[in-house]
Length: 252
Image (cartoon, rainbow, N blue to C red):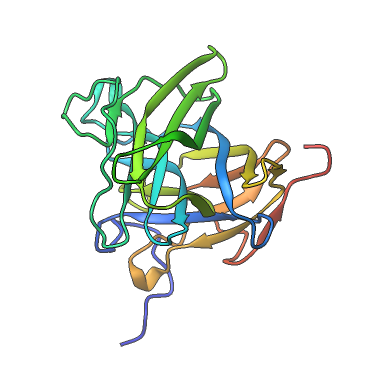
Protein backbone atom coordinates (compact mmCIF):
# COMPACT_ATOMS: atom_id res chain seq x y z
CA UNK A 1 0.00 0.00 0.00
CA UNK A 2 1.41 3.37 -1.02
CA UNK A 3 2.22 5.90 1.69
CA UNK A 4 -0.13 8.90 1.86
CA UNK A 5 1.14 11.94 -0.05
CA UNK A 6 -0.71 14.57 1.97
CA UNK A 7 -2.77 15.04 5.09
CA UNK A 8 -4.51 18.41 5.19
CA UNK A 9 -7.67 17.51 7.12
CA UNK A 10 -8.70 15.40 10.08
CA UNK A 11 -6.68 14.52 13.15
CA UNK A 12 -3.02 13.50 12.99
CA UNK A 13 -2.65 9.73 13.07
CA UNK A 14 0.69 9.63 14.90
CA UNK A 15 1.14 7.50 17.99
CA UNK A 16 0.57 10.40 20.38
CA UNK A 17 -2.15 12.00 18.26
CA UNK A 18 -0.13 15.12 17.46
CA UNK A 19 1.49 16.71 14.42
CA UNK A 20 4.93 18.21 15.11
CA UNK A 21 7.37 20.36 13.18
CA UNK A 22 10.80 21.62 14.11
CA UNK A 23 13.46 24.29 13.60
CA UNK A 24 16.97 22.95 14.24
CA UNK A 25 19.47 25.59 15.34
CA UNK A 26 22.79 26.07 13.57
CA UNK A 27 25.28 26.37 16.44
CA UNK A 28 29.11 26.25 16.57
CA UNK A 29 30.16 22.69 15.71
CA UNK A 30 31.61 20.64 18.54
CA UNK A 31 31.10 23.26 21.25
CA UNK A 32 29.72 22.20 24.61
CA UNK A 33 26.86 24.45 25.67
CA UNK A 34 25.87 25.64 29.14
CA UNK A 35 22.79 27.69 28.20
CA UNK A 36 20.24 28.26 25.43
CA UNK A 37 17.57 30.91 25.12
CA UNK A 38 15.01 32.17 22.61
CA UNK A 39 12.05 34.55 22.54
CA UNK A 40 8.62 33.09 21.77
CA UNK A 41 5.59 35.07 20.63
CA UNK A 42 2.23 33.50 19.83
CA UNK A 43 1.37 35.88 16.99
CA UNK A 44 -1.87 34.14 15.99
CA UNK A 45 -3.31 32.07 18.86
CA UNK A 46 -5.27 28.84 18.50
CA UNK A 47 -9.03 29.14 18.68
CA UNK A 48 -9.86 25.44 19.02
CA UNK A 49 -9.84 23.96 22.52
CA UNK A 50 -7.26 21.23 21.93
CA UNK A 51 -3.70 21.01 23.27
CA UNK A 52 -0.86 22.87 21.54
CA UNK A 53 2.72 23.02 22.84
CA UNK A 54 5.50 25.40 21.69
CA UNK A 55 8.92 24.60 23.12
CA UNK A 56 12.69 24.94 23.14
CA UNK A 57 14.24 21.48 23.46
CA UNK A 58 17.81 20.51 24.33
CA UNK A 59 19.72 17.25 24.78
CA UNK A 60 22.14 16.60 27.65
CA UNK A 61 25.73 15.40 27.19
CA UNK A 62 28.84 14.51 29.22
CA UNK A 63 27.54 11.92 29.91
CA UNK A 64 25.17 11.74 26.99
CA UNK A 65 21.54 10.85 26.82
CA UNK A 66 18.23 12.35 27.72
CA UNK A 67 16.86 15.81 27.15
CA UNK A 68 14.22 18.31 28.16
CA UNK A 69 11.81 20.87 26.73
CA UNK A 70 10.64 24.27 28.01
CA UNK A 71 7.70 26.16 26.58
CA UNK A 72 4.19 27.51 26.67
CA UNK A 73 1.03 25.48 26.24
CA UNK A 74 -2.54 26.11 25.11
CA UNK A 75 -3.98 23.64 27.60
CA UNK A 76 -7.58 23.49 28.82
CA UNK A 77 -6.57 21.65 32.01
CA UNK A 78 -5.17 24.95 33.34
CA UNK A 79 -6.88 28.25 34.26
CA UNK A 80 -7.54 30.37 31.19
CA UNK A 81 -6.23 27.57 29.02
CA UNK A 82 -2.59 28.70 29.40
CA UNK A 83 0.33 26.87 31.01
CA UNK A 84 4.09 26.40 31.02
CA UNK A 85 5.97 23.10 30.83
CA UNK A 86 9.54 22.23 31.84
CA UNK A 87 10.07 18.49 31.75
CA UNK A 88 12.37 15.89 30.30
CA UNK A 89 13.61 12.35 30.04
CA UNK A 90 16.62 10.42 31.31
CA UNK A 91 18.68 8.19 28.97
CA UNK A 92 16.54 5.17 29.94
CA UNK A 93 13.34 7.00 28.98
CA UNK A 94 12.17 7.66 32.52
CA UNK A 95 10.98 11.13 33.54
CA UNK A 96 13.60 13.47 34.99
CA UNK A 97 13.00 14.49 38.58
CA UNK A 98 13.48 18.04 39.72
CA UNK A 99 12.95 20.66 42.37
CA UNK A 100 9.48 21.68 43.50
CA UNK A 101 8.01 24.49 41.42
CA UNK A 102 6.78 27.68 43.06
CA UNK A 103 4.14 27.93 40.34
CA UNK A 104 0.81 26.23 41.10
CA UNK A 105 -0.59 23.42 38.98
CA UNK A 106 -4.34 22.88 38.88
CA UNK A 107 -4.01 19.23 37.71
CA UNK A 108 -1.04 18.73 40.09
CA UNK A 109 1.39 17.99 37.25
CA UNK A 110 5.05 18.42 38.31
CA UNK A 111 6.11 19.32 34.76
CA UNK A 112 3.19 21.51 33.64
CA UNK A 113 2.31 24.54 35.76
CA UNK A 114 -0.34 27.25 35.67
CA UNK A 115 0.95 30.40 33.96
CA UNK A 116 -1.02 33.22 32.38
CA UNK A 117 0.40 34.23 29.03
CA UNK A 118 -1.03 36.40 26.26
CA UNK A 119 -0.87 36.34 22.46
CA UNK A 120 1.24 38.90 20.61
CA UNK A 121 3.48 39.32 23.65
CA UNK A 122 7.15 38.20 23.78
CA UNK A 123 8.28 35.59 26.30
CA UNK A 124 11.91 34.68 26.83
CA UNK A 125 12.57 30.96 27.32
CA UNK A 126 15.91 30.23 29.02
CA UNK A 127 17.57 26.92 29.92
CA UNK A 128 20.66 27.44 32.07
CA UNK A 129 22.83 25.13 34.13
CA UNK A 130 22.52 26.02 37.79
CA UNK A 131 25.55 26.16 40.08
CA UNK A 132 24.28 23.58 42.53
CA UNK A 133 24.44 19.80 42.17
CA UNK A 134 22.45 17.14 43.99
CA UNK A 135 23.97 14.78 46.54
CA UNK A 136 24.07 12.18 43.77
CA UNK A 137 26.15 14.45 41.53
CA UNK A 138 23.30 15.38 39.16
CA UNK A 139 23.35 18.81 37.57
CA UNK A 140 20.47 21.23 38.00
CA UNK A 141 19.11 22.76 34.81
CA UNK A 142 16.89 25.77 35.45
CA UNK A 143 13.98 26.56 33.13
CA UNK A 144 12.83 30.18 33.19
CA UNK A 145 10.13 32.10 31.32
CA UNK A 146 10.33 35.91 31.31
CA UNK A 147 7.49 38.16 30.20
CA UNK A 148 9.54 40.78 28.33
CA UNK A 149 6.69 43.29 28.24
CA UNK A 150 5.99 43.17 31.98
CA UNK A 151 9.56 42.38 33.01
CA UNK A 152 8.32 39.46 35.11
CA UNK A 153 10.54 36.38 35.47
CA UNK A 154 9.07 32.96 36.31
CA UNK A 155 11.52 30.23 37.33
CA UNK A 156 9.56 27.06 36.57
CA UNK A 157 11.96 24.80 38.49
CA UNK A 158 15.26 22.92 38.11
CA UNK A 159 15.51 19.51 36.47
CA UNK A 160 18.18 17.03 37.62
CA UNK A 161 20.33 15.43 34.91
CA UNK A 162 23.70 13.63 34.82
CA UNK A 163 24.55 15.73 31.75
CA UNK A 164 26.89 18.64 32.43
CA UNK A 165 26.34 20.31 29.05
CA UNK A 166 23.75 20.79 26.30
CA UNK A 167 23.66 20.07 22.60
CA UNK A 168 21.18 20.05 19.72
CA UNK A 169 18.87 22.97 20.58
CA UNK A 170 15.65 22.89 18.56
CA UNK A 171 12.37 24.80 18.70
CA UNK A 172 9.16 23.03 17.80
CA UNK A 173 5.39 23.02 17.63
CA UNK A 174 3.33 20.03 18.76
CA UNK A 175 -0.36 20.32 17.86
CA UNK A 176 -3.15 17.94 18.84
CA UNK A 177 -5.59 19.88 16.67
CA UNK A 178 -7.02 18.77 13.34
CA UNK A 179 -4.92 19.54 10.30
CA UNK A 180 -7.78 21.69 8.97
CA UNK A 181 -8.55 23.55 12.21
CA UNK A 182 -8.05 27.34 11.99
CA UNK A 183 -4.45 28.33 11.47
CA UNK A 184 -2.26 29.54 14.33
CA UNK A 185 1.31 30.85 14.25
CA UNK A 186 4.28 31.53 16.52
CA UNK A 187 7.47 33.51 16.01
CA UNK A 188 10.89 32.65 17.44
CA UNK A 189 13.55 35.35 17.70
CA UNK A 190 16.83 36.33 19.38
CA UNK A 191 18.08 32.76 19.71
CA UNK A 192 21.41 32.45 21.54
CA UNK A 193 23.61 29.79 23.11
CA UNK A 194 26.46 30.07 25.62
CA UNK A 195 29.38 27.65 25.35
CA UNK A 196 31.56 26.14 28.07
CA UNK A 197 34.01 29.04 27.69
CA UNK A 198 31.30 31.53 28.55
CA UNK A 199 31.17 32.81 24.97
CA UNK A 200 27.76 33.88 23.66
CA UNK A 201 26.78 32.86 20.13
CA UNK A 202 23.86 34.37 18.25
CA UNK A 203 21.91 31.94 16.07
CA UNK A 204 21.04 33.33 12.64
CA UNK A 205 20.10 30.12 10.78
CA UNK A 206 17.65 27.31 11.55
CA UNK A 207 16.69 24.28 9.43
CA UNK A 208 13.07 23.33 8.83
CA UNK A 209 11.88 19.82 9.63
CA UNK A 210 8.37 18.35 9.58
CA UNK A 211 6.79 15.16 10.85
CA UNK A 212 6.27 12.92 7.84
CA UNK A 213 2.76 12.18 6.61
CA UNK A 214 3.43 8.44 6.86
CA UNK A 215 4.33 9.02 10.53
CA UNK A 216 0.94 10.68 11.08
CA UNK A 217 1.80 14.36 10.69
CA UNK A 218 -0.05 17.11 8.84
CA UNK A 219 1.39 18.17 5.48
CA UNK A 220 0.01 21.73 5.65
CA UNK A 221 2.46 23.10 8.24
CA UNK A 222 5.22 25.52 7.28
CA UNK A 223 8.26 27.30 8.67
CA UNK A 224 9.52 30.59 7.26
CA UNK A 225 11.46 33.76 8.09
CA UNK A 226 9.98 37.24 8.36
CA UNK A 227 11.51 40.60 9.25
CA UNK A 228 11.70 39.68 12.96
CA UNK A 229 12.41 35.96 13.24
CA UNK A 230 11.32 32.44 12.35
CA UNK A 231 7.59 31.75 12.00
CA UNK A 232 5.90 28.35 12.33
CA UNK A 233 2.32 28.12 11.10
CA UNK A 234 -0.39 25.47 10.77
CA UNK A 235 -3.04 24.95 8.07
CA UNK A 236 -1.18 26.79 5.35
CA UNK A 237 0.51 25.88 2.08
CA UNK A 238 4.02 24.56 2.74
CA UNK A 239 6.55 26.82 1.05
CA UNK A 240 9.82 25.67 2.61
CA UNK A 241 10.63 21.98 2.18
CA UNK A 242 12.18 19.77 4.86
CA UNK A 243 15.86 20.61 5.24
CA UNK A 244 15.45 24.21 4.09
CA UNK A 245 17.99 26.49 5.79
CA UNK A 246 16.18 29.60 6.96
CA UNK A 247 18.51 32.52 7.57
CA UNK A 248 17.54 35.78 9.24
CA UNK A 249 17.73 38.94 7.11
CA UNK A 250 20.76 41.14 7.71
CA UNK A 251 20.29 43.49 10.63
CA UNK A 252 17.71 41.35 12.46
